[in-house]
Image (cartoon, rainbow, N blue to C red; front, side):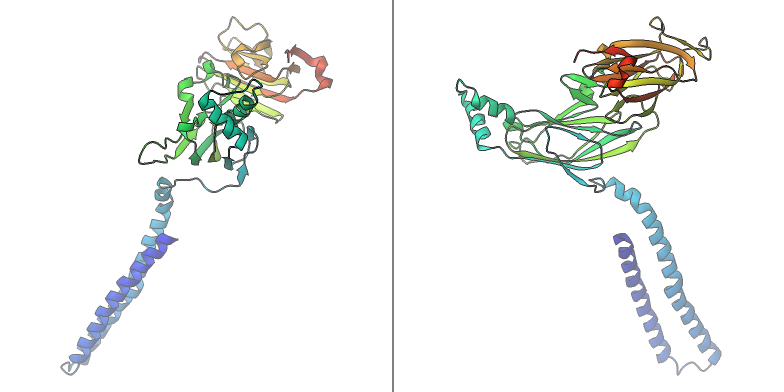
Length: 385
């Protein structure tokens, strides 16, 4: 809108100048009117004047409008290159140390150190703690590492833009972006199943206020799947605003399920990679169709002895996020279009992991729902809680 107004202002100025020329032309005509005896010559001059006026007030405006419209059509592409922040969404306040986010928007956190925590923090620098450890408890609360755990739809990735962060490096403050989730030292997707190294998946940052001039670098991150984590440690005061958005992807590999029971598709799309679906709850799993392995796997034939093959689906569970060390309930390969039997996995995390050599187009459709006490008869694996 501003660009259109600017172009129209320029147009008005140009028309004003040309109209001034027309006025001067009229004055010249008036001055030489007595010298023009031929009415035909006079009418020619008037006709030319009218055509010039029509050209100025008609064609020029139309041309300028056409240029303005073309500029407006191109403006979104130009404007996108200068967008510092995404479009505004609803604002959410982070109140829990482990805050799970499933909606787009601005996530705001602000911390002010209590007097007891500040006293304990000062004692830390002096190495002074009493025997009861009261100050130590306050200190642990002050330097606790918290996280904004973000999870989207299965076919999305997470985009985080740090619109603001006040995290002082010199007082021990630190933030970190994790491509995936981390909990108790375990990662989703598993370290060996991700196409990026762990070093590339972790990005740490903070504000170094001792450096001059102070530079507030805006941070922008994207995950490789529908899960991402923003960790933060603020021993003293600090704050941040993180904008979260979700983008659709066509070939999801690793999917994290928070609390949604639904039908999920898992495929390797012909690549040599391991893909997994992990549900953060005890779950009942049922294969609705499966195509894993080579042409020798005939329709309607499913094998549960596939560890000798390079392509197979393993189902199991674990107390943590790392699926590579999960307890296995079954290994499945073959080809079937009819639903298989249900099996209940009573573990903290239920996982279906598709191992692919890259030689075949593997695909599995899996129905996942929360398990309850009535599903104990379907249990094929019970983990120690």
